[in-house]
Image 1 (cartoon, rainbow, N blue to C red):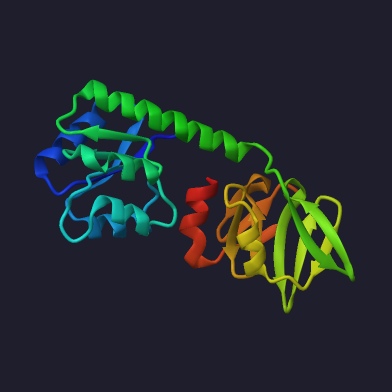
Image 2 (cartoon, rainbow, N blue to C red):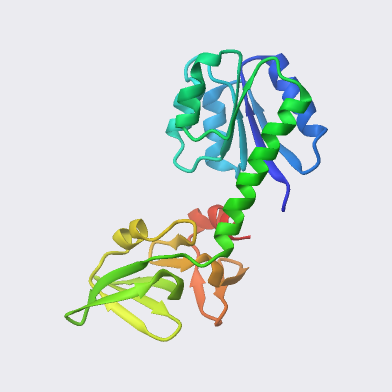
Length: 232
């Protein structure tokens, strides 16, 4: 795996320093930023790819649990706190572990191992074929298209064109609606007019994605960072 990009969020200087040392002593982990302000952490999460989030709970302005609720694309999260009473809420937010301060390097390593296991599972999910179907109306008939067969989808005036390996299906369904129906583990909106299947992408040439069959798909400048993070 590529280095795991970590973000630390804690309003206590000593806690941040300890976590920075633990990360430096752990092969495979890379520190993106260490934030004392949860507001600053939100800014980092919006601008930088983060795989693993170490998050304190009781902080001024915005608690760790509320911070996590504001994030649409949540990293794998390990809570670090001195207060055991928040554990149920933390695990309700799908935290991978809950470290009670003060914690040892050994306990930190156990939590990181759990996070790595989950990240590997997520990565393996991306390499597998998506299960399920799109059902759209085309030429006065209902057509069922397997997610795994879709190469890309193009918005075209009031229509949408769905390209598979063998056919092109034209439907009045909106691109926004289809984006919501497709699993985001396997599909990505790269332009206002295009959605691509992640496993069909071969390379990025400037601001153009090239698919396995040579099809060229434009990438919106505003989406390029997300494309690089998600696909490469």
